[in-house]
Image (cartoon, helix red, strand yellow):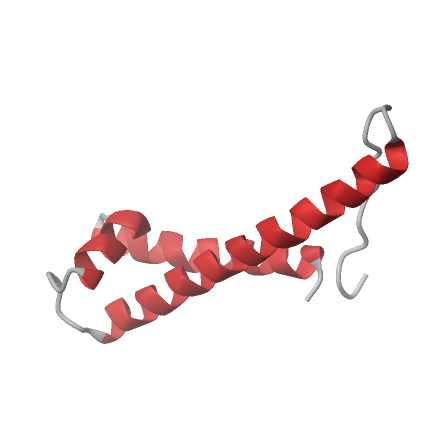
Length: 93
């Protein structure tokens, strides 16, 4: 999975999470804490919500790992100069 694909996944998961947050009036961080503490029932929506949230956490961790490696590479090639970020081609473009 590329950085671009991970970023696209995170945006898609955020859209799903935003719909659930709006429907239930609770941000995902708070929902997840309550759910993991066993304070909420196990409805279909809540099981989906947990899945989306955990997938987002995994993608964000993967993104950070890949981004740190990418930044190390940029620093090695730029020396003491400014880092040169170039546009990434999107998947399928």
